[in-house]
Length: 351
Image (cartoon, rainbow, N blue to C red; front, side):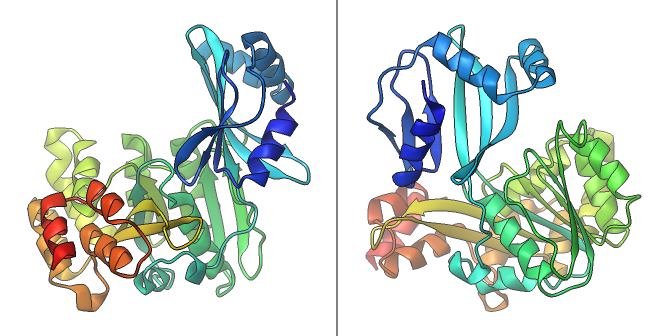
């Protein structure tokens, strides 16, 4: 198996992901669709030999212990990749995601203008949420790049793995990779607070300790950017609160009400006007009304607050989807399939 040839074919077809599984031809994802490439089936032995050539001894031992490994891989002159190696049916399989080297400017991402305004915040917590592959990392990288061109500040990113390679411009940027530069997100974040940062990017708030440290960092005057695998603002607030024991949930609601600045929830759609993808985006800004809702455990009211504050830049996911449809960017079928309230959106599109 010649991995570089497979990756080159994927690159020529503008694939976002490559899947290598024993007894199958390699498959790639192009604009959300999984497609086989013109390559013979690969054997378990070929995959294992290729995988061993990609990792060092420490990584191999970790894989033997845990049966899963995340790492980055680079083909010079081609791309960098985020790789997950895992076992399936007793043999090694790999999923590789293309890491684009050039950070796109925010205006090229078809994001609402209000997201650019978030890069002017001096402190607080900003969360970008969505499913895997919804463009969270790209949005955050574009936000960091906008601040990098504007401020003279110290930015520390904690990532798994480092995806976009950021070059210090006006800011000093340090990028730390999980497993290589730090053992856990919580450890990296704990020590980052002693490294004089102004802005901290945490790749994912995936456990209670990391979440608590991120909120504490936002409370103490830092701007903290992070992600969660949630689909909307209401679910994001509840997911954070539910991480805590019942006896601490009122306290964390109060802390979150004070520190949270915005939740941006993304979902990617295939474009019908040209090749490529476009995001639908829900935006919740933490106004005094939203802060009270969070403190008083009335998160069920958040969708209504978003709908009634469009003049401030807030937008619900379904309204964002409707805009994409009416602008001729996405199909009616995709719009309804990914809506939060499909029946309501179907009536809106028919009006």
